[in-house]
Image 1 (spheres, protein in one colour):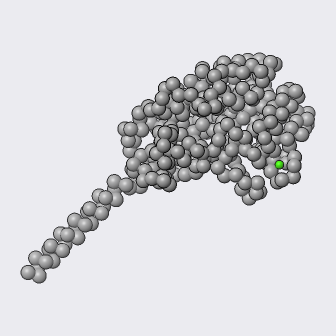
Image 2: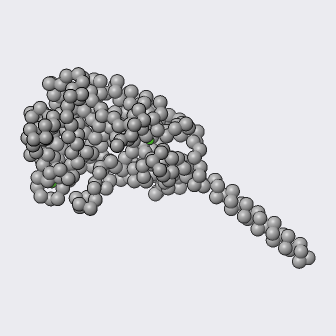
Image 3: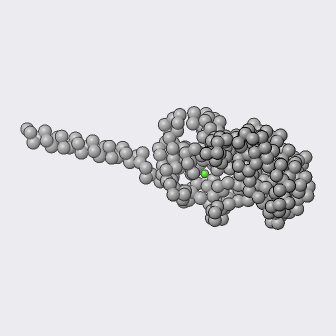
Length: 314
Ligand SMILES: [Ca+2]
Ligand SMILES: [Ca+2]
């Protein structure tokens, strides 16, 4: 009888052991599969942004631009937070840059400015210990209030053009900040659920930046979202027609405010496929849409794109 009890216990322990192993593997850390639903295109193809701009606004466009102007323009990259603080609050700002245009043009010999991200962002601080990089945008239609007002920015753009300086903005389409209202709505299962990349279990995609810890738990649900860079920068879903249009609208919106062009961030990572997480034909297709539907219509098209042909930023 004792032997029977022993064997029964052993069998039960084995069942428990194997059950726990198989249960663990369904939510394991080494699942690099590509679930079929992530290949589907979703959303409303006739979607219009609440901030919709229907086309080119000629009012604010410079008239002295020739095709290919960017080829002989010397750009100065300005990290806005640290460049020049005009009001002594510890944070660089648009008015500070405006006060330095003569220095940029005549002392440095530059006739173009590339601004680091200037929009409302998730990690926002004036502290010198935090870099506030701005590559975690919470609102693509609002300037970071620590840098000044939108009027301050427009005044800077005008002043640049008066000095013969081109000015471009940093556009971050692959991901937003976690504090973006779109992401909050998505986490809560609202109408923007499919604006981000979700799966019911944690996957282990490695887009090639060293870490495969790229899927993170929904803070308001039981599913997981993809973030190629880190959990604070959730990837937008560019297989959603609404996202595709919204991000094209962001470019129209700011070019209409007078910017001469844009620098595009993280271009390699827009759309993932079963075969690759970077440089995919699907990613190229969206940039082609951006070029043909938006940028080309401005006749002063310029987009500084890092890494689209496989050469990443150095
Ligand atoms: Ca300031
Ligand atoms: Ca992506």
